[in-house]
Length: 172
Image 1 (cartoon, rainbow, N blue to C red):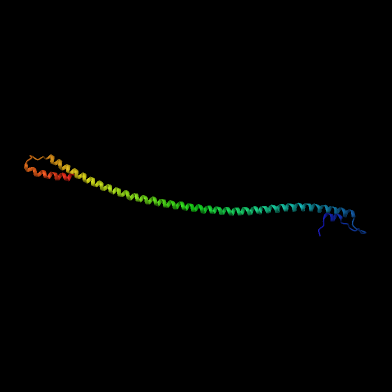
Image 2 (image 1 turned 30 degrees about the vertical axis):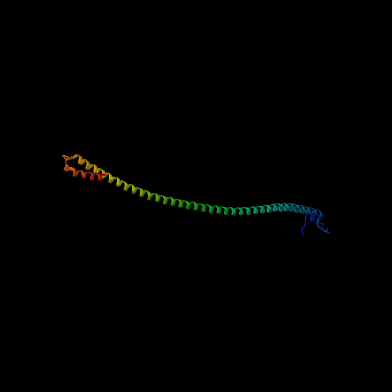
């Protein structure tokens, strides 16, 4: 059974022969009633504050739940981005390696072609030098012949004329 301030105020005591002083009892009951009334008001205030704190706690728990789910989804998104970035990076590296191999193969092919061209040019050079030597040798023999002219041109020397065209063929 709950006693309210009104219960205390309306409480009536029986008076006996040598009973309590009614005035003192009434005054004491009045003080008790005021104290209980004040405590009841404080209790109501605390209940309202508690209710407000419960609401606030409820909101904070919802916010925490929202933040937790946001954090989880953000972490998932970041993980997805990392995986995507890693795939992109791997793809770029793979493409770069393929391009490098392609460039290397092309360079090797060009090197082979350049070596072939150099070899051809060396052969051509050797051929030109050989022809030049042959031509110079022919001219040298011609100059020797011119430097040592034969004393006279006789019919007997007609055989020498036949030899000369042969030496000219060597020069050509």
